Structures are given as structure tokens and as C-alpha cells.
Length: 127
Image 1 (cartoon, rainbow, N blue to C red):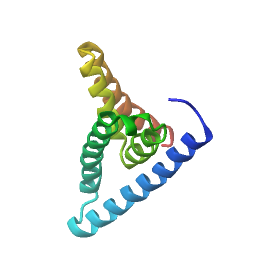
Image 2: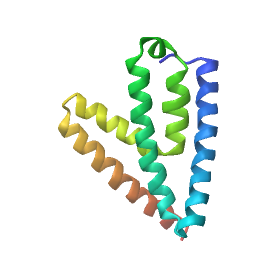
Image 3: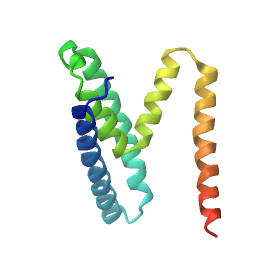
Image 4: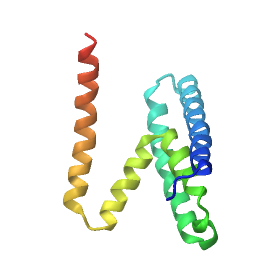
């Protein structure tokens, strides 16, 4: 992927659409279900589903695959701002397809435990 003004613009546009979509899904799920955690689960699962569909569509059609702006718009911008889980699953799939099982396990553990540890570290600093 090449850095250009337009690729950054498409990431920003996709990011804005993804973050607003995440907010709307969270608000709707909270008003319907009454619990905020469902909104997070919904966007994580839906974001991974969308990342899978969009990746397959972009990679399967040569004309779409040649476009230098679709991946920044959808995969990096929209899906990754809609949920970071989609980027996490995308990276896990890449490691799995490369048969890097040890690195896959280390990546999952590092992400989950590191995120939890640094969350508590961040809250602990302010106490």
C-alpha cells in the first residue's frame, strides 16, 4: 500500500463512517436491550463479518483489487473504526493462513493480556 493524500483521505472518510455507525449501533442496542455490552458485541461480530465479506470481494475481483482506495476506505477506515476486533481477526487469519500457529497464539495472548494489563495500568495511574 502506498501512502498518498487520497489514501489518507479515504481512511479518514471510512473512519468517520465507521465510528458514527458504531455509535448508532450502541445507542440503538442500548435503547432496545437496555444493556450497553450488547452494542460492543454486536459491532465486534458484525465488523468481523463485514471485514470478511469486503476482503473476499476486494481480493476476488481483479478490478477492485487494483483500486488503491477500497482497502483504505473499507478495511482500514470503516471496519477498523467500527471495531478493532475486525482488524484483530484479520491479522489472526493472516497468521493462520501462513501456518504460523506459534505466532498466532503469541499474538492472541499478547493482545488480550497486554490490553487488559495496560487498561488496569491506565486506571491505576489515576487513582
